[in-house]
Amino acid sequence: MYYTGKGTKIERGESDGPAYFKTTTGPRYIEVPVNFVGKIPVGNDTRIFLGAGPYAAFGVGGKNKWESTVAGVHTSGDNSIKWDDDTPFNDGDPNQGYDKYKRFDYGGNLMAGVEFGNFLVSAQYGLGFGKILSGTDNSSDDKGKNRVWSFSVGYLLGRSK
Picture 1 (spheres, rainbow, N blue to C red):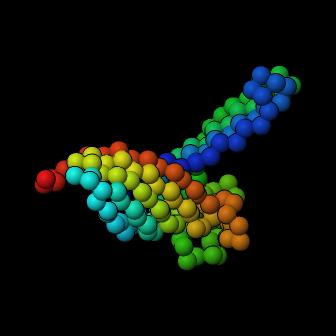
Picture 2 (picture 1 turned 45 degrees about the horizontal axis):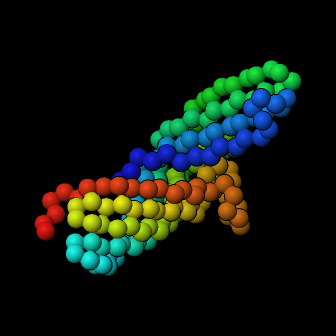
Picture 3 (picture 1 turned 180 degrees about the vertical axis):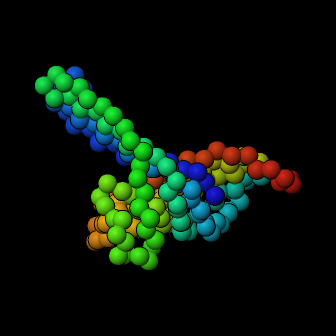
């Protein structure tokens, strides 16, 4: 189980120019991946591993931030992300809206890494299968879905030599 941050940044114009706009979105999730992993020994106490599997995530927080400059007037602000009370099986939710995020996210993971001794280094790519904005269900394109690269460095406890 992970506490993970996902998000995006959109920036238009030059920050010192006549017109500038930047917005960042940073939703936070509790994510449960179920990866099936295979290991290949490649040397004395060294293994390469590859894995794949699904994940499910539950939105718990996050912030939207923005700033803009138009004709020399600078504005900025932030607000907490609003979560819809949707479920994966409820299309008729009256609380849907484009200013809210779907609380539930799901998708698939691909991972690769290496273990050497009790240490490991890995990279993982997660692709969301569902749109994250409330009220958007058209999945004919990949816009509006979470896509995340993550990197890990770890130490394996209780491992016998």
